[in-house]
Image (tube, rainbow, N blue to C red; front, side, top):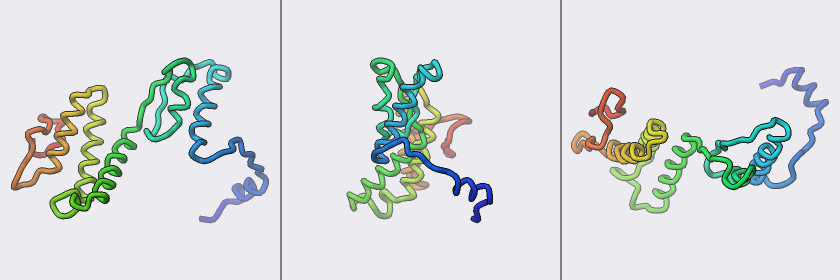
Length: 164
C-alpha cells in the first residue's frame, strides 16, 4: 500500500528516541512497572487490576507496587482459550497414539477449545458452574449420533447444546 505524503514527511522528519534498553521479553514488565509506579504522582491514583495474557512477566513486576498483593490479576479469556488449544495440540504431537481418526484431531481440539471459551465466559465468578460446563463440553464434543453423551450439558433456552 503506498504511503501518503503526510506519512512520508513524518518519517523523514521524525527522530525516534528509545526509552528502553533490554530484551523484548523484559519490555512488557518494565513498561508496566513504570506505568504503575508513576500513577500516584502523575495521576493521583492506584491501579487495582492488571489485565494480561496469562503468560507475561508484567503482573509479577507490578503486583506489590502499592503494598503486598495490592494488585489483582485478570486474564483475557481469549488467551486462556487459545492456550487450551495450544496445549492439546502439543500433547497430541508428543503422544502419537492420541492422534488419528476417532482420537484427538485438530477439528476436535478446535471444537473443544470453542466450548471451553463459552463455559468460561458464561460462568465468571461461578467455579462449580465452570467445572460442570467444562466437563459438559468434553462430553458434548465427544458425542456422536450413535453414542450421544449430553447428560452433562446445560438445560434450558440458553443452552449451547442442540440436544437439550
